[in-house]
Length: 68
Image (cartoon, rainbow, N blue to C red; front, side):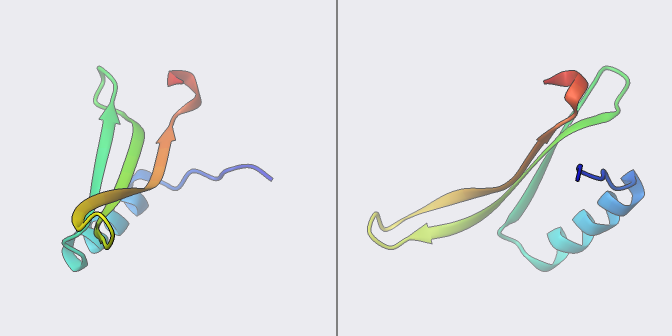
């Protein structure tokens, strides 16, 4: 059972949808010199009760195998 990487257009549409609906969701992409996306980091901002301060949780972190 391996990871199936979705098509770029599918990822783009999903990100646009998530970013437009949730202002606490953020996505960062890593690109190579050819502008091809080779990595992804998504995070969600929230608040800590005890520390009484905001922080971010990493939801996804992916780097293409050839760039690890």
